[in-house]
Length: 108
Image (cartoon, rainbow, N blue to C red; front, side, top):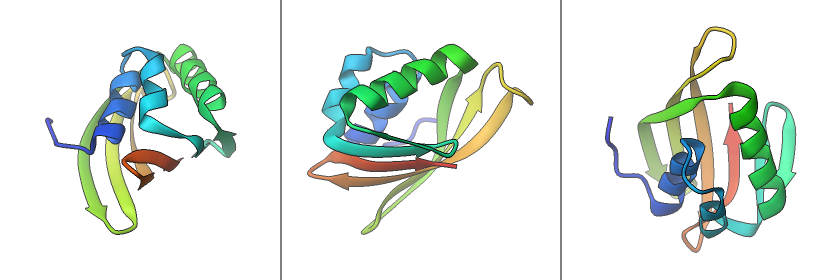
């Protein structure tokens, strides 16, 4: 499905699907925080490492399915396909943006 996400959010999903990891620095603020699988990652280097490790571990692709944008941020439901138990999973991504950059991301 082709949906029009905010640029920073779109960049996150592009990098998740194999685009240049250096693009993350344009999408995330310097002090951004990511919560995923019970872990917290803060700052560009930690976020780049987290995403690279997840890609190596699960060899996945991701497709945003739906999104809602409001004053609190952007919530995206995306479908992951990869080498993890079950092979498919729909995950909810809660983004908070500041100055058009991702300040906070929680995946569950």
